[in-house]
Image: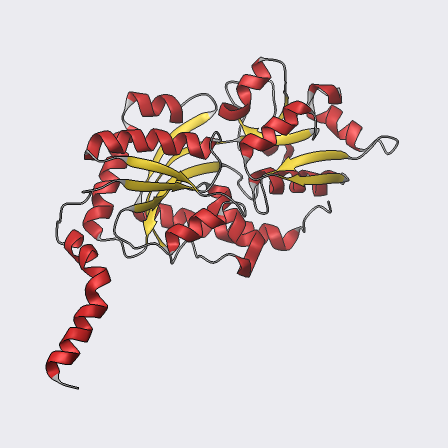
Length: 328
């Protein structure tokens, strides 16, 4: 093969990566719309945060940041799509704890991505605690009353809604069921919003969701809060105990939402996105969504996020070894 022929073949092989190389050397990124993949349905908490972030980044960078809801398989379909996307800064990910950590532990080899190897962290920007809710028709107004009802063998088994394998809505109730020896029926949903819709309708009797998603229905009398799944009570629900008060502290089921790029994304783009996230976190409009109403605005970036992911993966895997799933 001639030298010119070899050079032509090498150039052809490099063509897909030339735009990325240009971006790495301070190119014009972004010079077209950027896609933010949210691996959950529209209307849920992750979608809400993703759209708020998209508005902030669109204003900062002068290009549209557009939310793309790619749902299914406990959020893993959307995450796998981003993991396989070109690391050019035009396809990014806004996941939550369930899709990024819980699904990896619960689904094992069926998950076609590695949260540590396949992504570059930009940041974690909000935390929240799920709440165990009951339909008013169940006739319970406290966690103790729920335990009494669930243990009453003369009545039908209670059904609880879950947003999929590895989700906080599933594993937190599994933890309670194992700890208190409850016999429950598991009903899976594709996301928090459809689960809450069916809980309000009474198709399932209990389920978990964060306060921003379900709080309005509580205020309307359509749901009753029984337990905060997390470290402490919420200011919005001062009379509702937390799982930590019951002695259930591991794993930490604090739900977070974050921002990630495919591994290999040029450092200058990651740096600009990290700065953009930090600027968004100081915006009053953004903080109105991420702070209060059951949420806590945070800002963790870079190596701090990586260390957190490592801890949570280890904790969830230990939990999975300790207790198995509730039989549906």
